[in-house]
Image 1 (tube, rainbow, N blue to C red):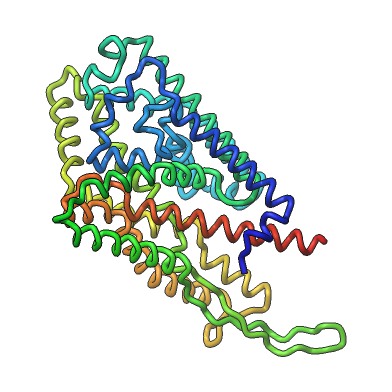
Image 2: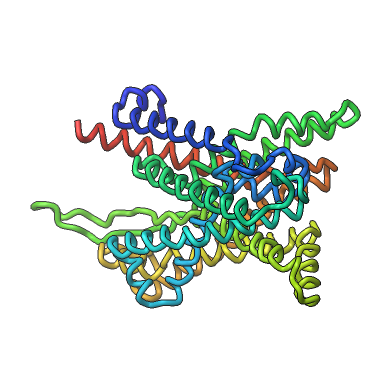
Length: 424
C-alpha cells in the first residue's frame, strides 16, 4: 500500500522529491522570463482557440504562450531522440549499440549534440511562425531585425539546453523520466487558468453542457487509468528445479503484456511530425518563386482544417503506436529469455513458435491500445465540435501524460522504498 508518510520518512526518497520540487520551481520561474526584444502579449489571442498552438504549448511545458527563454521546451531534444531511434532500425551498427549500456550512453550523447542545431533551426522557425501570425506587434520596434533574430535563436537554444540538463538531473534521482516530469509540470501549472477560462465560457443556459463536460472529464480520467494498468497475462510454467537436496515441481507464472506498451511516446512522436510541415512552410511564405509560395500557403491551409488535421493526427498516433512498440518490445528476445530460464508457454513449443505466439497476442491487444491512444489524441477536437467551446485545446493528451507520470513516479518511489527497507 502506497503511503506518503513512508515516503517522507525515507530520507533518500524525501531528498529526491525535494530536489525535483526545487527543479520544477526553477523551471516555472524560467517559464515567465520573456525573450529579449519580444512582446508576449501579442501572442495571447493566438493561444485562445487554436488547436495547433495549444498542442505546441502543451509539449513546450506551457512556456510557449509567454515566449519565455525556455519557449522551445524539450522539443528539439525529443526530435533528436526520435531521429536516432529511427536510425537504429536502419543502421545495423546503431542497432547493436542500443543493446549495450555503453552504446546507449554514446547514442544519448549524440542525441544531446544534435539537439543544438535542431534548437537553432526550430528557434528560427518559431520567429517566422509567430512573426506571420502576429505581424509586427510581436517584436519591439517593428519587424525582427537580423540582430533580434540571432538573439532570440541563441536565447531559445540556451533555454532548451538548460531544460535538457535539468531533465537529466531529475532522471538521475530515479523517480521518473525528467522530460515527462517537466511536461507534466507545465500542464499542471496551466490547469487553473485553463479551467477558469472554460467555465467562464459556459453561461447558465449551457448548464447541462457544462455538467456533461465535467462527467466526460471524469470518465476520460478513469478510462486512462484503466487502460494504463490493463495487461494480458500469458500463462508460463518453469521446469522442475533442484534446490539443495529437494526437487521442486513446475512453477506456474504469468508473462504480463501491457495493453499500452508504448505509453505516451506515440503521441509525442505524432506531435513532432504533424508540426513539422507547418513550421517548414513558414520558411517559404515569402519565397521569390510563386510555386513555393503557393505550396507553402496550401500546406498551412490544409493543417488549419480541423477535419484534415484530426484525420492525420489520428493516423500518425495509430501508426507510431505499432512502430514504437516494435522498437522497444521484441518477442524473439522474450522467447529466448524464457527458454534460458527453462520456462515455456503450455501448448506452445519453445523457440520460434513461442516468439510467434507472443507476437500474435501482442499485435491483437495492441490494436485496442492504438485505437484508444488515437481517440485520446483527437479528443480536444471532438470536444470543441460538441460543445462549441474553442478553448478546449487541452484534453485527453494532457490527462494521459499526467496519469502516466503520476503512476510511474509512484511506482518508482515504491521501488526506492523497498530497496531502502532491504538495505536496512
